[in-house]
Image (tube, rainbow, N blue to C red; front, side):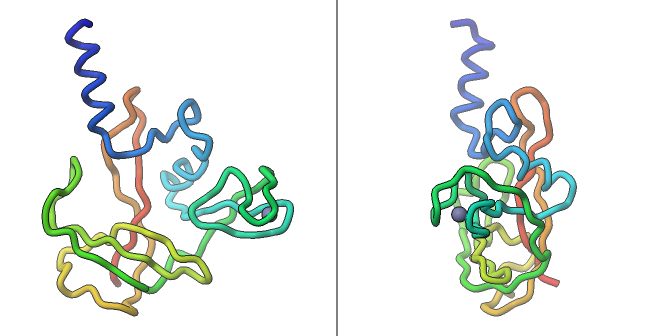
Length: 149
Ligand SMILES: [Zn+2]
């Protein structure tokens, strides 16, 4: 195996983020919406169920027909945890992970903030995005996140 191939293999196996392009991800529209500044999820065309995270099939009626709906950009911290060490590539500890209540959905998310010790249950947060490492082909990758306001 050539050295450049080993490097490619190493980078992919140590990359904690999903590949987001249409070639690698059946829910690539979700990531395209993030790049547009939109927080979206799937809505079942069979029964109308709105799920988080976005699904390729409905857990209620099992259809694979769905469309995309925009979610409100504000929510409330329902639960959270602070990671003090072992941050993934591209992030510095401490990191705040939270379950954010957005309407009836509970969205697991990173919280982007400069003062993690000030995060509290019930705190209002708004949607934002975090840029992470690019796709192997160079396309920009984004993650959803929330920030206090
Ligand atoms: Zn359904």
